[in-house]
Length: 347
Image 1: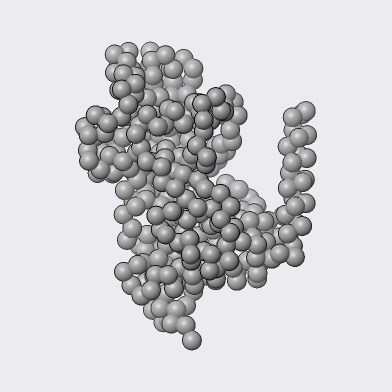
Image 2 (image 1 turned 90 degrees about the vertical axis):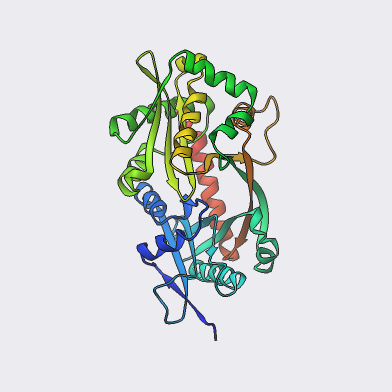
């Protein structure tokens, strides 16, 4: 008989208390992140499981959070990002890790969820564990993270010469950076994010996601940073803090600010601010694998990011079909979605 018990719909406070044991930020495994997504997307379901020793319900040994959308009465793919998380100081961490994933699979069987995707950091060294559980690695992704644990002066001396030159130019042009938690400034940020989306052709969160984030995430841990030049707002980034990390979740700009390098100084000031507050990492989003090459669609943003001399924190993406006889359902959904997307080109 197992010494452990898995709790469904765990307590918010105990969940957050468990996460606080980890210095590394993991915003997408926070309780609030699931609530933000659930409030934003009506078809989304959030699954949370916590593992405890039997009859010891007030101390979690591990947690896992996943999300999925339902179509035709079936859940498509349940996605887990940066999890499960287990307390390696107690008991057998691999046992806890496996137990949580198996219980998540049981949830999928009970609730007709067809497959699971789990994104696991490479440095967790869980390849064999995921293979033992029957998961197949399908791709890799990397988070681009700037580390300033050695201080902001050390970072300044290590970023590229071009980046320092751009920041100095912005200072000379008197580009002003300010932080805000005002809804009017949130709207200004989002208008620039939409402008960036239209230029780059990428997808973004809807405005209501950011609105929900400001409603549900602690105010002192979320804000926008905006760049102003000649009395006009020209760049903006939306940030949240979790653990030791500040996350840039969406950034945009107007072309008018490019010539004075407003983006460069804005992100630099975010890092200066974060370093002064005692944080040590700035999360600048995902980079696809293989890395973009010169001339490709994503080369420009990759070139811009790598000038910060950050680190690629790689993740393995694993998948497993839990209900193989229903795979055709997800195929129908993808066919319908692709047809809808094709039709939208002509609307």
